[in-house]
Length: 155
Image (cartoon, rainbow, N blue to C red):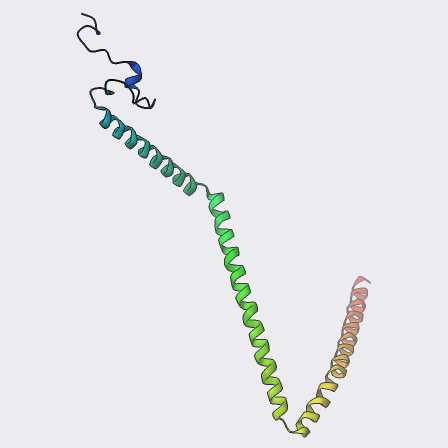
């Protein structure tokens, strides 16, 4: 007895549920499963494939240390830029408040104190220049002493 004898012959296209041909006269039968169940199975398989693909992508991302490092660097740079912007804003606010406090203190000071402060401020550049000259002289003497010591040791 042949495999075809006595069994109803189902066309090959009716067995293929992925072909999308649902116009067959007889319902598609996949190994004894009605068409509705076959479509549900196909949909479930497709969902499972998508989930598996997402899982594989997630695992690949966890293993890819270089891309993780790049993401972290980008995140930290963004955070750094944000903090820098906040610091610049705060610095500007503090500078404005300091200027306002300085002006208020200057206006509240008696004229004699204002003159004294102006005279002291005028002397500051002269004192700084004198200190620079003194520092240069000390450095020159120290260099000369080092040269003398080195020459004496070589003899």
